[in-house]
Figure 1 (tube, rainbow, N blue to C red):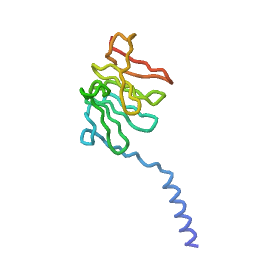
Figure 2 (cartoon, rainbow, N blue to C red):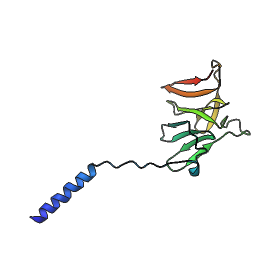
Figure 3 (tube, one colour):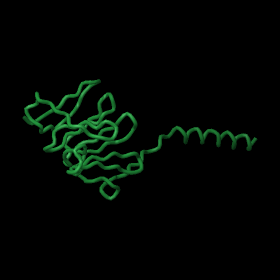
Figure 4 (tube, rainbow, N blue to C red):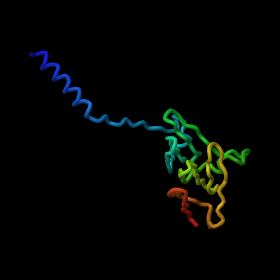
Length: 142
């Protein structure tokens, strides 16, 4: 009889313990982990699960293990137009829209940038990007 009670107690204690949610474990990431700058004005998640981090010294993509960093390269016209990233947005087609100080807006499709020209904008100083579906809205200072 004691053995039956002991088995019942062990079975119930396992079920009770499984019902208690585990607390999330936070990890602080910074320049020591490969982030180009500790100044982070924006973060976005793409459709593949990557975290995109806008910093004051380039754009970083975090895959859960480490960072890949994109920065302006004066020798490469297809590179990021500026390093001080003010805003970023992931659109419905999984493209990364990036607003950099002095560089206007660029769109990253797979692994390269192209400048997005918008003659109707009075300013290239874009401070926010948002959207819905296939529409993208830019907030400017001008």
